[in-house]
Length: 608
Ligand code: UDP
Image 1 (cartoon, rainbow, N blue to C red):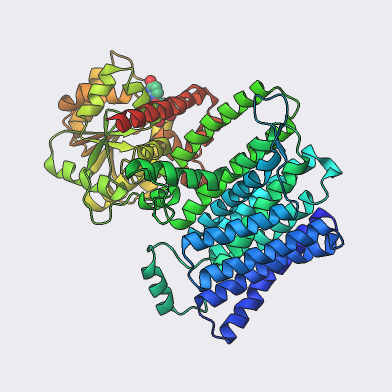
Image 2 (cartoon, helix red, strand yellow):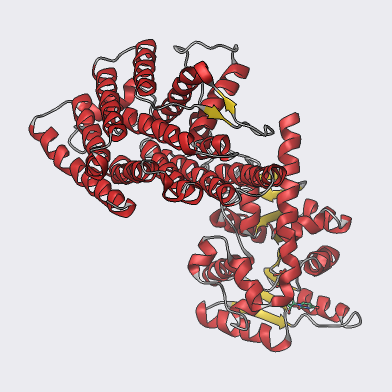
């Protein structure tokens, strides 16, 4: 059987088997633990049958299948009898010891910086047992998040398959089929674990189960399935070790298993730092995913983050495998660069994805985001503010600030002072919302200039406010006014003026606005000119609300097209605008600048 056939048959058996066994469990009215054992069974059969068909005549395959059966039995017993962690560890040692007796051994290692292989000699069995236990333990740990174990095992074993193909070619007769069998079975279990759950468990039982553990720990695949996946992966790495050659001996398996090991390491390091350093198995330490969940990440998003990291590590490992002839230093450099980039991506992604836990907690109306007081309000809140300003009649200034404005404010003292003094600064840009989340600041929603104009016009038409439009090219602002009038019947636009007036004409423009007494003045001269202009003339103008709206008139008049909805939702509007106006390209540099400013601020906060 070829690898692809093994992969697909393992998938079909595991995926279909879960459905059949679900029916059986329902019919037998099995309790949760019994049902979970059945789920583990279909996964194990998914791995075993294709391998059996592939090479049942080979003693190594047969030994491997017996060992996996032992892992299944041990996992079932561990779950059904609620064995203590020490007993589970003893069972695990027993299985790993048996594997070494059957010839699954790491004989030699080639550590980095060593020219030659180091013969492990009589330490070979101890090293192998420790390694298998570490891998299996790390995989079993991941069961706390439903979907994580199977997703992770699938990605990792596919990564091993790719590495094996690159490094060993056809020499490894067991690595490729075993990797495909594990990957297929895990892929088959993944949707069940993540989406389908256990519908036959009554809601009451589900609730009890949840109450008995942490609230986020729903029903999962079952210990048996996790034990099989863990030991299968452990054995797969050992099979790889036997034929392996160079640096990858250590790097590939470690990288591929980065995530569970990171989780275990985090538990150790973090738990140790927080409490007392302790090696006690019985002690519960906070795991990385628990820290993320506590930070407000939903379990599914947490799984998505972990799987993304695993994919990232797998990619690095495959890259290293492909670079097998490159010097060690070059590999180390690539690894270092990837590690830094990966850390930044992971850190930002985890923070961005987290829902800030503020249910019932009243947050401040504005936060200090990189020294600029940005409002935490959503669109409704911003409109309420503008309504209050109009009623108050005294002059107010609103800034719709994108990333480039924040970056500019750090270089331009006048702009910084204006933004600090403004009555309302909204986050007009996905970059600000993301970066604020990285800093743990509660900026919930983007309030862009274009959207704000639409809403203000809607409200103005209802409440009888009058508007004055200033900015953009001569034809453009009139066209924008015309379209707004059509869209919001009853809207009073008391004046329109393009934004290309000279310094001599300026007093006339100011006087014209002041004479017409608009309730709201929209100024589209671009950042920072519009902010400086408004700040300079606000008292003279006497308008209750002046809002800087950038290039919004170009969009409203349809001179420029607005990005499609999906791009807006994905926070990619800047990309669309740059494609339309390549002259905006230099502005894109504000994004990396904003990221670096944010990370610096995050590090500073950590220290404080
Ligand atoms: N603009 C203007 N007078 C000027 C320079 C620019 O009215 O002297 C207008 C320009 O036509 C455009 C807007 O200001 O409508 C600037 O848009 P941009 O997209 O550059 O600004 P942003 O939205 O990024 O602040």
